Image 1 (spheres, rainbow, N blue to C red):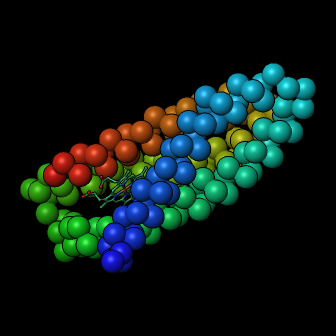
Image 2: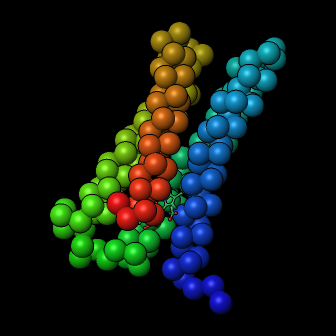
Amino acid sequence: MLTFKELALFLHVLFACIWVGGMLALVFVVAPVLRGLKNREELFLTLGRRLSFYGTFLSLGGLFITGLINIHYLLGFSQLLDLSNPYTKTLWNKLFAFFCVVGVSLAHDLYFGKRAYERRFNLYMARFLGFLNLILSLLVVFFAIKLRLGG
Ligand code: HEM
């Protein structure tokens, strides 16, 4: 039978797939195709809005909620301040990287991405923040793997 603990971890991994998979698909498949099209600016903005809803708000929100449930079942909130435990230290590193991802995503989606075609600077910032977010997200996945191996 599927337990609540398993369901939470399953949803956590699913949200991680949507978040990281969505970014990789955008970088390697969608963006190179769109760049060759005439109405690419309009397409990028429409796609960005949709990806922002499913990626930033749904997936990152879902990752945070299911992540808290994982902490409850796999560690216990009372252990969060015990920094002599390598698992806890890695978890804080993961949380720090996660909040950087949230900050970068908000700046990207709500400011620079929306205004990318108004000024050249905004376009460069949108590209830079998108790339930075991919690197930070891969770092979060690396921390998740470290946690799996005990911290
Ligand atoms: C971009 C955001 C995130 C990504 C991509 C991500 C990815 C993952 C993945 C792939 C796993 C499965 C590892 C495994 O058990 O084999 C995992 C586990 C876990 N995640 Fe996350 N995660 C994210 C955010 C968070 C947040 C915000 C929290 C806490 C609030 C969190 C807490 C945990 C915990 C406690 C585990 C269980 C680790 C273990 O196996 O002991 N994650 N995460």
